[in-house]
Image (cartoon, rainbow, N blue to C red):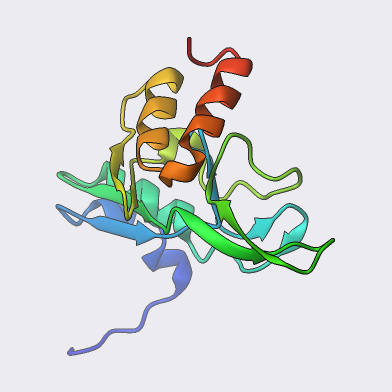
Length: 157
């Protein structure tokens, strides 16, 4: 058939996905913390979307021969400050996820992260390496603050 329609339980099954060599999963995020945890559904307790199979497709792609999972996002968001009503630039790579945020993708499942400032390959990295690689692709205006936070938490020297 030219088109075959299958249910989500089948097409989002990581085992089924992994049977495709060189499978690539591309998703996005609202925030990603310095360890690689991805929040794609909420900012804190405020829900914006559902996961849509992100964890399943990411895991399936990583298990695929030659496969990879990519989180692609802009390094910043222009948000409205709830207190002042003014717009402000906020880093989407953060030292910690907003309290209450739903973790859509656990850090061990985060493979590649891409921003307009580069690519961070997190596969097989320890936490300190993840921190360094994620800061390197964060918006330059936020890198010093992220590094200071990582040092304060004792993650990097």
